[in-house]
Image (cartoon, rainbow, N blue to C red):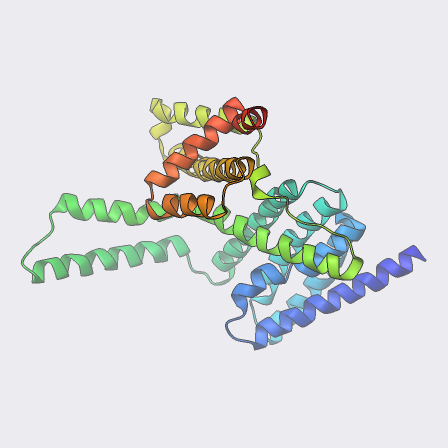
Amino acid sequence: MNDTQQLKDGLRMGLVYLLLLLVVVFLPGSEIFALFVLPIPFVLYAARYGYLSTLLLGGFVIIISVILSLFLFTGTLPLTLLAISAGTFIGHAIHQKRHPYETWALGTVGVTIGLLLIFVMVQLFSQVNLVDQYQSVVDESIEITKSMAESTGLPLGADELDLIEKQMNQIITLFPSILVFISIGLAFATQWLSYKVILWQEKKRLAFPPFRTFSLPKGVIWLYLGTILLAFLPIGATGSLEAVIVNTTNLMGVLFSLQGIAVILFYSHQKRLSNAFPILIILSCIIFLPIGLYLTRILGIIDIGFDLKERMKQTK
């Protein structure tokens, strides 16, 4: 009986996914919403039956997607791989009753894997090197900037042009960080919507806890410090390792900033301050970037290193 019900649920979720996929194919402009809506059927199935059954369902859906890609839209297969990867990671974490923030972290891993698969497939099947294409855009932009500067009678020197080119090429170096930041946002949206659907279908109340309770593992601070120290060594300025260091420090910096925002919200809650107080503080940090980012980052590091929120509880 259980196997029969599992098979029925699998067919139902597979059908729901394919219907959503067809909506994306025939409704222009829906691709952005598809990135965090399409994984939901796999989240629901994995939350109930675990990752092995979900991967079997994914295999069936991949076959259908390949057929659709031959006749309708070549992008159906990459979208399907993203949906399976993200949905399986998030759903299995829910199945294991992981903390919502752990589920979010695993979901970010799943989305990142899915986006990487899309990137690789675009490179392979379109025979287009995206990095080379971006480099061509940079070179063209530099030439346009140089021509405009000369036409205004204020020509740019070689050093200035090199600086502009270096800053534009920095995006290539930061590509992994950008990919992870996008994955964090997509995973959060997918998980939040999945919680709402589970509540509607099964009456199970799943929700993110108040953000003021957000807390990174203490080991993260040692990873951050180790990466910073490595950056000062001679080997830290070499090619691939330099890119790893830059991306790691940027990613860790944003996470510490989130930790700092959680401290601000926690302090406001402990002191029973008006909701306007943390909102104004956070908005000020955003407006006065990068100063605000560094201040919240420092606050987050202090919280992790010295249990700042716990000390606030004791002094309440």
